Image (cartoon, rainbow, N blue to C red; front, side, top):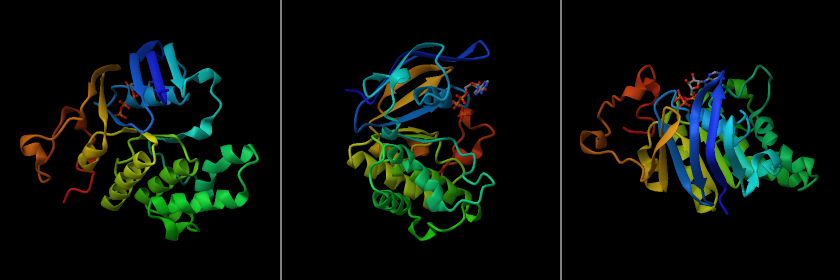
Length: 254
Ligand SMILES: Nc1ncnc2c1ncn2[C@@H]1O[C@H](COP(=O)(O)OP(=O)(O)OP(=O)(O)O)[C@@H](O)[C@H]1O
């Protein structure tokens, strides 16, 4: 049974369709990148999958259940596009990550000890084991991004969905993220990751989906760097990168 299935998914903002008839199937344990130019509808598609924006047409199923009837949200880990984990509320990293345990706690299970262990394990998975008690607003932007990823991991999801987790983060965070993707895939979790640059993730991905103007224009082999693009020192210049230079070379190229 697919983890995610969309059929003809369409999303409109103010009467303008920005996701137009997308068919998508993600199987358990698959790692899939969603790519495409700025404004092509990547974030909107993912938000529709997790129910943050309504569908204007089509269907979304999660684990074989129509999304409007789906209740098992602890199976879905979602890392939104970065807006800053520090929202003016002085929370520690561990407190933010423990939000990922809410769905478990509302069920009354498992024990609080299991919650604490999941929080510690998730912080360690993103390389922040020494920062559990740090106030999030004292962490760097890249560290805050890792806190958000740890929060999604603490849910112990069967699918991890990340919206451009590499934008503007340092090499250490990029490496931590690549490890997270590898570890999750090895554990049988599906991963859906919006990104502009695949870098070292290329070999861990099963597929890449490319959107253009709200439609799927490619669903298959991840694009591989060719020619001088394969040279890490090459200055990438793509039409979609206009005004978005910090999305380039984000996977720790030297
Ligand atoms: N809340 C909103 N209200 C109105 N229009 C929106 C809203 N969010 C996004 N859009 C528009 O929908 C289109 C698709 O946006 P979306 O953020 O999904 O693209 P994207 O592919 O994720 O882009 P990026 O790579 O820049 O993150 C864009 O034209 C955008 O301006």
